[in-house]
Image (cartoon, rainbow, N blue to C red; front, side):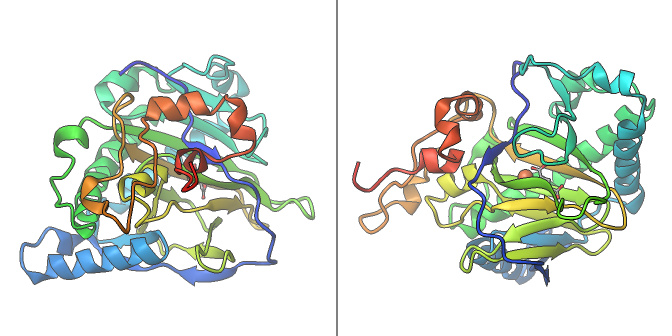
Length: 330
Ligand SMILES: O=C(O)CCC(=O)C(=O)O
Ligand SMILES: [Fe+2]
């Protein structure tokens, strides 16, 4: 895969604010039961189906990633953002084809977010481009990247099964797919009225797995359009659906509109691991989910198409998923 624009998100027009969002506990998926072959796995697949259909998010427990691997990744993220401006500046570039990009401009949807984005799979191909400062960044983030990808692949198999497609539906395409890490940093909220770190958007891929240092993620209830403040117990992983899973599922599962709020007590870091197909691999609505009542609702598209969409004029008026939706009148 060639290096390309490091972006993973598509802009969504801001919804009407609805005051302080209520803390909400997301559905919980016991990952260890997905490893079983008896009825336990099927029961969890049903939970996955309900969570994906109703809210588009769930949290994963018993995923097998140790507390220390997660803490070390968050500390590497933290240390990177605290490293001298000069070492971060190395990754700032208007060249959007760089394999690693750092941005602290707070432009567009990055209301007060600084971020480092880099590819993570295959690790040996990308790790040499990752920051050298702090010196432990590569080892700590690399270990997390490998472990989170193992979890992501199992979850994708479970999600494909929950759609009735069978866990092997995508064959080797998932193994060959992309993994992009968005390592985010948000300041403590000190200015009254400045409460957003990252504006509402959805992620482009199949799924995003989020590990934050503290609460701050908010997701929009797909039915009521009300914002919910995501509660994430320590050691759990938050998973949400992205644009390409909405397209693959022909709209059975919907992409999740989310944003990040600032904290009044502390600054925050988060690591979003985004998983999708390879750069030029097209995602299509599964034929098995198409019939007379459910015609194809999405145009086929690849990660490359998403990257081409971002700088286009269309981006101003439409989110990426909207650009894929086939208008019934067309
Ligand atoms: O930091 C968060 O809670 C959300 C991050 C996010 O949405 C992203 O990186 O795409
Ligand atoms: Fe996101």
